[in-house]
Image 1 (tube, helix red, strand yellow):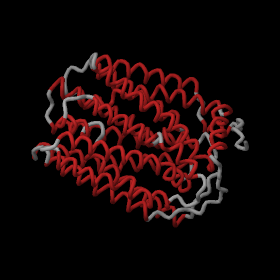
Image 2 (image 1 turned 90 degrees about the horizontal axis):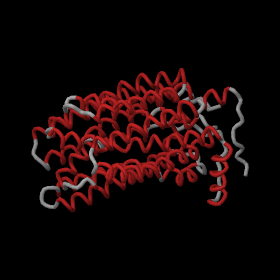
Image 3 (image 1 turned 180 degrees about the vertical axis):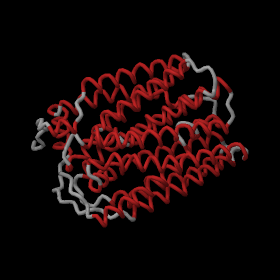
Image 4 (image 1 turned 60 degrees about the horizontal axis):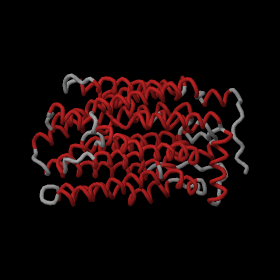
Length: 424
């Protein structure tokens, strides 16, 4: 059982975790990897390769390091020492340096592009290193019956603020010339990302009553293989997640598709971010509450269906207006990566193994995220319709596997199904 925090600390922690999420979402709305970043890159180079790299970096950069840092996290009891101490250098500092890339954009576009990609990689690798500690902290603070609602409410508030940020982004892009518009966007993002970090610094971490695990790399590798061998349901989840990750490869090209097919102005791209955040806000609030009552698997399946529909619409896009629907559906799906896709992994294991299970699931997803954008970049050369068709088919295949092959882990544990033995 997850230890319940004291009520006085629970309200305090709820407040500051909510502020963390709200500030983070608001700051992220000014630097959306789906809309703003592709637009910025399109100003620097006509090549599609850097856009593909953004998808690689934002997915693989965040996912892959988690398995390696999870081993370290299981050896410590104070998660805040990693989240706050390491987070300042690894997660927040890159956003301030990214502003320089916008300053250089007009006169030195190639240098600006290189610096931008370095900062993006720096942040995402740093976030991946810190992520298991953040997940372990949330697992300490919130019981299974409250996690979905908390993340759903956080996403609702954050996306609401993010919608305001998207409106402001659209106004900035329309009112200011390049690159001044992006200097302002990146500066606002850096400021609110820093406020997010400060909010986490005020969280009161509960005392961990579980023993820590200290394994060398050889034992840890055997442990990982043992988990995959014995925990059949978790292995099936990972396999379905491989197809789901491959299916998401077309998301990074939706904005470029709209720009090239319909010559949409920069301000409209900012409004696409607004539509995506609206989808995240509505989807997280409803699916988070549903997850608390019916399990995370059902919520995850609904969000995946939204992705399938989004790609199906993108295949035969008749006008740029329909893209607002597409981005709203993409937003519903994107929120699941923060909510149900993260929380469902925690329920495959006990509290002591949350970092390792999360790292194993996310690193596997990260490896596929390295491959998916490369496939997408090559596929896009045959036409965006073909790319979106492939993404739609793979997403649907992953959804079917998840629905028919994977058992809801919350009910699995309630049914006393044997979990893997961790003693090697």
